[in-house]
Amino acid sequence: MVKEQYPVMEEASSFFLEGNHTGILLCHGFLGTPQSVKELGEALAAQGYTVSCPRLPGHGTHFTDLERYGFEDWFAQVEQAYQDLKASCSTVFVIGQSMGGTLSLDLASRYPDIEGIALINPAIDIPAFETYRSQPPLAYVAEDRPDIKKADAVEITYEQAPVHAYQQLLRYMDAVDAKLSAVRCPVVCFQSLEDHVVPPGNTDSILSKVGSGHTMKHELHNSYHIASMDHELDVIVEKTVQFIKQARVLPAGDKL
Image 1 (spheres, rainbow, N blue to C red):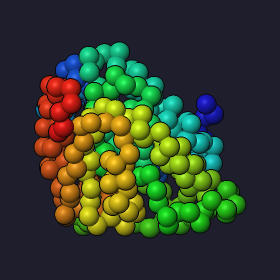
Image 2: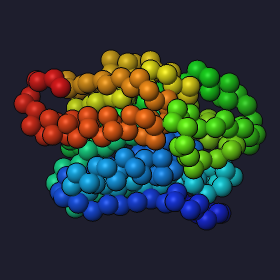
Image 3: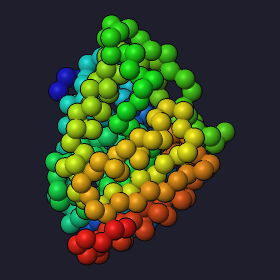
Image 4: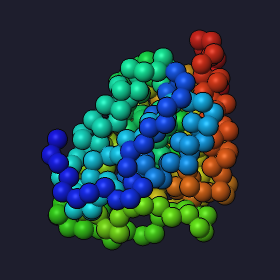
């Protein structure tokens, strides 16, 4: 993999919190960094779990670094983190937000030993991004402020991003959408009913296509897209811990 040209921003680095033999792999979203899920990771670590969150290549440095990477690089980073976590933990769950949810679905489609996945406003189809498919890849897109309802939340992200990165995201969502039936582990989704980035219908579409017999959805009524930094983080933590405990004892054929 090519090397990034810029240093990692303060607080944007990967993190690893050692706990028991149940591992949780956290996947941050497009243009985000591990900082966006750090509070979630710390809350889960406080429950005793081992938590790992890799930083995706080109993220958390400088927006021009995104020109150097594609979705294969993003997945490779998550896959390596999963394999490292699996080496030290007897069971592994995966949690992904936005494109992190896309990565989680892809990983679960390839690794049936994953115990379960939790998806926070997962991305599989974003019509507003379709215009970027035909634009010059080295053009740039100005970014809006992060979609968080909580007024004092501050996410580390970029103010602009190359069209190339958006094209990679679009291709990746298409590729993962085509393999959702291969996801057979338990799946729980958290769906913000007001999301200004990923249409909430993405969650319902994903749940209708996965091959899992164990699915559940929790609606979030006071959070926007980056729900891990929003008002209902405590709900996500509580329901995720409940999901982990239930998924580990599920008899075949039961539904969450």
